[in-house]
Length: 98
Image 1 (cartoon, rainbow, N blue to C red):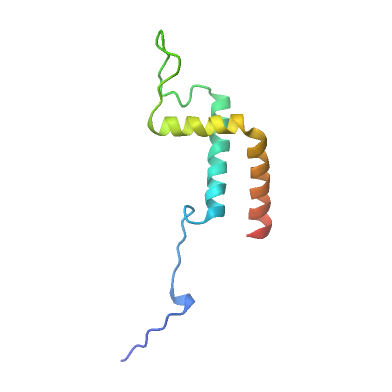
Image 2: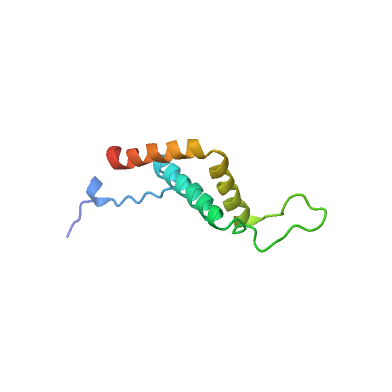
């Protein structure tokens, strides 16, 4: 029982994460930005972690994931026309090119 090993593409299972595919990475990033912006529109204090400004403080200290998600929501607020155009472009890309 001699088995000959061949490297055919059907023999290999290729698993590609969204992190390594540029189009998927952009899609995931746009979805994150839109979701964070929408969540913060509904509940403005969602990424504050229950913290409130102390007397004399000018900015609320955020850390970790709350800070990252707050920044994404801020990008969505400030760059909303660009984000909207990017979302429309990625929707067309996913629907017709992929």
